[in-house]
Length: 326
Ligand SMILES: N[C@@H](CCC(=O)N[C@@H](CS)C(=O)NCC(=O)O)C(=O)O
Picture 1 (cartoon, rainbow, N blue to C red):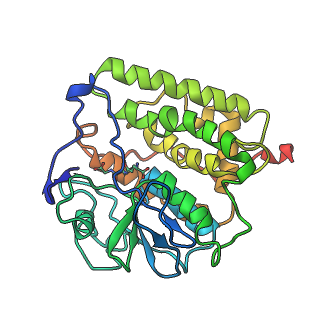
Picture 2 (cartoon, rainbow, N blue to C red; picture 1 turned 90 degrees about the horizontal axis):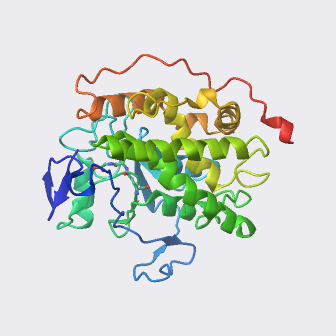
């Protein structure tokens, strides 16, 4: 793990020195938008027009944020429109690499060795973290965005001329409700597991732990009354929760010490998870080997031996009971 400083790679771990042991996720710096007509998003100056074959996603199968973009790409039927490169699961002193082993693809565009070289290709003096996912524009050879919540909204609508326009995970009438759920799920759950796992003081860990399980309990209750988080249809809010649930029992319970309960102990959350997992196309976006190998193998401050636990037994293809909501 490291970061770029004025375009030079430095091998440094996240610092929690000035935050009382709390992990604080920095804001992603690349925040432009691909739009159907190419006009810049409000408040931005760079415009990017949706075109088939122009954009490329750099992802890790291990990463929950990148996983969202893979799900949207598949469910919006954009596989032939937006191409993908998958980094290697091990993130060590060089950060994410393009080692083309164990199911990683290598860099499909330039044959580079490290993801940080993609960032410096966009800005030779870039200072900041080198994260996945990255949405890359082949035409201007630059990063459009490295912020997953915004990339999934682009995939949801900007490419509708070529993708499946009948699928809409952020429909206008449900936006306020979706945003409200996201505002609970992001800090307490999606980022909450990291806040627990990367905390370096007992207090910071317990603060994140308490918020995490309070939020899971709230959602368990909600899902005892309805099939999905927002009413009767799958929305963005579900996919944003899904990728964290997918990693919860195999990784976050042990590695990040989120062990009050497993998702398997929540009847509604676990059935809900299987319901989403069984949506055609979704299972193919999930690579449990990359997920487990990445976390247990890369975070040596947390797991110095790099031993990857063998369990738990998972059967996400098992039947679920969510059909009862119709
Ligand atoms: N805000 C970003 C977060 C992305 C992120 O933190 N990705 C992690 C992998 S799960 C990463 O690449 N971390 C590398 C680093 O922080 O150095 C998003 O949602 O897209």
